[in-house]
Structures are given as C-alpha cells and as structure tokens.
Image (cartoon, rainbow, N blue to C red; front, side, top):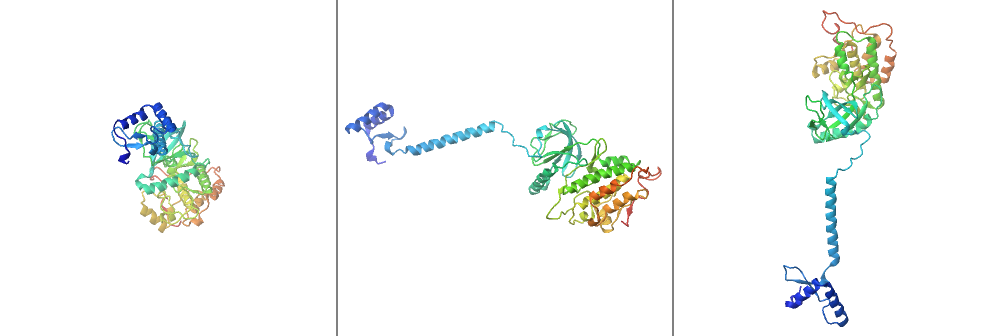
Length: 412
C-alpha cells in the first residue's frame, strides 16, 4: 500500500472505530457523504490486524475470493466429519457372490485331515454338518498365491453348479478368512487362532461313512463281496462320467478322496487339484498321487480327462483286492515300472473276466485306447452280481496278507 495514502493519528483510529464499532454511524456517514459530498466515502480504510500497523482500502477487498475460500473450508470440514462418522459406524456388508458363504454362520470344530495345500476340519454351517477345507498357498510366494486365488475363484463358480448323487455336495466357498477362527489343538471351540487373510475356504457336506481307503483297509483280510465291489465301482464311474460331461478333470482319483455316506454310497470329494478342462491348451505337470498317475502324467506330457480313467482302473483293482497297488514304491520305482516297462498290478486269478477287462482297458498306456467313463458305466451295469459269485477269494491264515499272486503283470 502507498504510505502516503495511510491516515495517521486519531483520525485514522477514529475512522477505524467508526467503521468497526457502529454500523449505523457508518451507514449514516456513508449516506451523508453520498448526498453532500463531504465526509468519508470509498476512501474509508480498514485495519489489517491488531498486531499490524498497515491498513487496506475497503474497496480493494476481494469478497468473492473470500467466499470461495470459506466454502472450500466448510466442505473440507464436512468431508472430515463424514469420514469420521463412517469409521465409527459399521458399514453394511457387500452382497455375497452366488457361491460365497457367510463365515459368520460357519463353526469349525476339529481337524480331520491335512494335505499339501490345506487342512480339513469338521464343522457346521447354518446348522448342517460340513467339512471345511482351508487352502493356504502363502508359502508359494505372492505372485503364485495370486494365480492360485484367481484359478480358485473361477473354479468354485463351476463347482457350486454341480449336482450329482456321486459327487460331494458343494456348500460354498470364501476368498477371505478375516472372520474365520481355527480351534486350537485339542479344543472343540471355534474361538481359536485366526488364519491368514489370503487363505481360501471350501465347504462341502460332511459324510459320516469315512473314506474308501479306510473301508478297504478294514477288509484287507475278509474281502468285499463282488456285489459290493461293483456297486462302489459304479458309484465312482457315474460320478467321474458326470464330471467329465461338465469338462472337469479331477486329477487326483484315489481311495482317500472317495467318501461314503451312512448307506455306503460313494461320493467323489476333494477338488483341491481339479481343473476345468482346458479348451485351447494342454494341461501338463505331475499332479495327483503316486501309483494312480497315468504314464503321460508321470512323464510330464500333455494330458486330458483320460488321466482320470487310468486312475479309475488302478482304484478298481484296489477295491477288488482291498490292497494298495504299489506299496512302498518310490517315484523313481513307479516311473520306471509303469512308464518304461509298462507294468501294472497283477490281477488275481479269481477276478471275474468282466471286471478284469475293465481294469486293463482303463489303465492302458495309450490314453486314446482308454474308454470314456460313460462307456465304463455301461460295462459295469451289464455285470451280473446276482449269480452267487463271491468277491475275491480270501487267502489262508498261513499266507501273508494279500493275494499270493500279487505282483506286477509284465504283459499289461
């Protein structure tokens, strides 16, 4: 401001007091000056501040800019208030996807099994008995975990649509576990330790009949009846045929993954490594369990749903014999015998031809020669189990457990 324009002394202070202290006097002065031309008009000065000696002219104040600044300040205060209000008030949960479960309704009880990528617990969901598999890929690294979760989200969308009496009923899944509590060891309460947020949860119906592996082990001496063997084989074949019709490969068909209900109806379970069959690229990699892996899988070659057919052939042999196909064999041993020598489990002489032919066709080394599971269902349905034939002939007490002709069939 030009110093020559600033009033001095009592006059200035008087004008300042007159402007700020009495609006009526200021109005009167302004009116008088406007009419008579004598008094204070637009040359009136406003004091800039109590701690400053400078003054500014009233007509130089940018009132529009002051209004904008005031409005901006008020908006910022309002936004801060809204944010603090949201933080204090719980927000309504986002709507669940079609396959998502409400973890608040899930009560986990005790651990019943564990595997490479997860642990299985028994629990209840919305009052129903369920099995809960908690999948954890955290040790694979962040990038690998993200890929697992992406594939998981796509696959559960398919699983939740599956509906077959020989496939375990899919209840739901969750991509996050922030509300999930795992019971401590030896505890039956679900108010235990939390799990990592990047875990995924799969919930299926709990079956009270146990696994097929346990059933076969319990009948290692007194074998299953032929009728029961065919019944179990049909259940498995129908379940696999259904999955294949939906373009789903299980990729880990084995006795541990077959569950039984109270009526001993077999249901396919554990879709931990199942995959929707690729449409544009072949699937590779050793996925599954030793002894059940098809030669092409053991070799790391591309494979399709026929790898499940091979595994079915091995499991059919185990169901009839109530024994393991390759006990105590390492990966190198199995790879050499199965891939290089073409060896398969030796079929007992007492096995009916109708069943043995299904075994040999299913475990053929060439995937193209293996039947579709729909054909296997038709072949099993033709078997007459009412002719009085029993199951596998039990061995004598003085003979070691298992059939005396167990071994490897080099002609397979």
